[in-house]
Length: 507
Image (cartoon, rainbow, N blue to C red; front, side, top):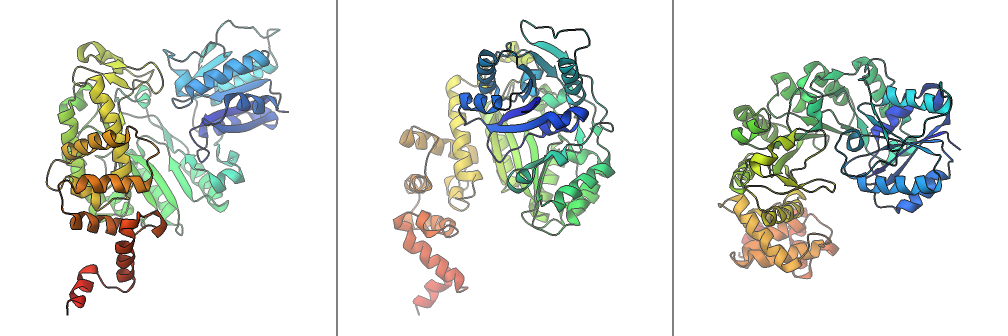
């Protein structure tokens, strides 16, 4: 039995909820009667409710996010029907900001904002009410938390279990808040950046390291803004023996020389930088209050691409107010010319709590009211075009971001526009599959092969595919390529390139 149970539905098992561990770490005398139990969105909701209620909790705290909002509402409905006296407290960005487009009214309380102090105080009041019996609310009572002092709250990292350390992503943070006001982002609500005590933070990371943690994903929005913190944290990892993996979200236009020098020291596979580009159009960026220093961005991307081994993950958004499909295409073409790294293509979402809705009338912005609240159409993009771009993004992940077709995918555009060429490819694929999911590698290879030989000679296409597939186990390669791939692997093992092999054979 646990008096308090903290839970959430993660997108997948490998993820872990840092927010739950903050709550747990700051429950003080209530901590011994508290348990963290995590689930995934793919599990049956009734089974989740059963597993939760096995602990007979008096209070259930649930973290709600865009990916689990609908499932959480269903979970609340079930729990309140079979165990109506159980107090349900919601927190997290999807519950903490209004308007609610998912019905959370059957919850007892909703905490808005950073909940470490507010949740503890609420649990104390529920378990030992100072004014007699607990008041039963018709509809959730909304509690706006005060912003906690980051130097006063207990850090959560010892709440990661040994199983978490061994099998899950370890999420960490060095700061909260963001100084920028990008209108599509919830971080813009908190303009002040606050830092955790650095010495204490490094000490906690060292404990995690000694326990075996080797994958650290920082959730800070502007990791590289504070050079004192950035340098100390990079030094922490540089002092360690690889392999390890550190993920940071960085702003693209702020890489002082000292930071560049440190990043260049990281070995391959150890550092990933998530870089939010979103748009390269100064007018569009200004319209959503996003700072954009293009010269610095291009300079820094070139440095990261050519002088470091860091893996980059860049973001572009489809559907920003005022941006056309042609404008988005220019952005994509430019990024592909600057880097070979992943370019994640996202569809604009209108999150509650942001100021994005102020553009609705001027730009005809229409969004879905079902999570993830993505745009359906606007004055520049029809519903049909948005649908096509969703498929474009999915196929881009499969054929470009996956790295499976590093050589072959370049044949799609050769010297033409990357966007226009891949758009045509995306349209053609959909006529063949009528789906964007469950397309096996064998089918992917066949699709890109059949498309390319419409405009390229077979030898060129097969050569590119053979080079790409030579990196994979033979059993995953279609039969018509196996013999060629096997020969490529043999030549590589013997340090003989295919060109040299051909020359030797002709003598």
